[in-house]
Amino acid sequence: MISKKDLSFYKSNGYLLVKNVLKKEDFEQIDKTLKKLEKLQSPGRGLSEPGIKKSLIHSLHKNQNLIKTIEKKIWFQSISKILLKTDQIKVWNAKSNLKKRWAGSVEYFHQDYIYWRELGFNSSDMINCMIFVDDHTHTNGGLWVFQGSHKKMFKHSPFLNINSLQKYFIHPSLLDKISKKMKPISISGKKGSCLFFHSKLIHGSAHNISPNDRRILLYDISTKKHFENANKNKINSFNRDFRKKFEKKILLQRIKALK
Image (cartoon, rainbow, N blue to C red; front, side, top):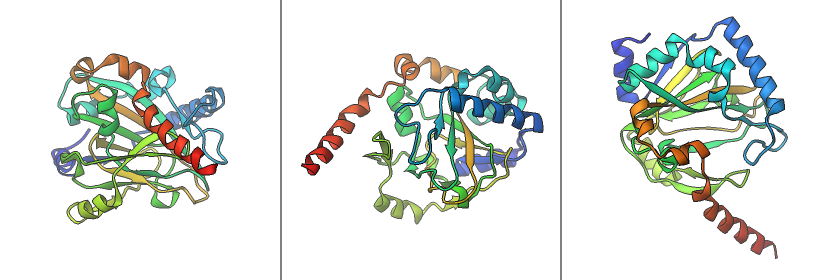
């Protein structure tokens, strides 16, 4: 499914854009599934935004319709195995970010492995597969990446996002230095395309202030070997206890400031 030139590009830059992986019937199944889950999945912390009842749909790797439509397809299996240099992969998590028109919120620049290592993984040899359910552009909050940044782990700082969840970002002063050596670029693609990228690739996206939705499916993929060697208790439960101490500290500071 990919050429030697594609593989060389991925090794150098940390990402690979693949066009037209979805067919008309795939779109119909995905759209139907997302609309159903958007209504059925219970509200929860981190799943909504101002003006948006549901901004994220989780646990898609357990959905049989999407397993058949995405994970079992030859293109998904083949490209993942080539990029990870393995004959067995493990999709251990999948979700849909519904960055809706006019209000979908920002995702600060970060490397995903900062989270994954706290979820029990001891290797960064992992990838994401981001599938564009809508046309993906800078104007509707599309992804930006720092080319070649996957070759090093950078320092991250904790912060509370709009849902008071502790997340990580790379400080602007550090991004200033990184951008002098690694060019940040905007990723654009028609719906039905997908972006494979390394777990250490620096990426982020702006608010969606356009009239167009920017829905994506995001699959987290590991080699079977690395998954088996990881801490399953942390992965399976998505234990966020390691973040709660920071969240409580910042929230208490804010409450104190209101007195």
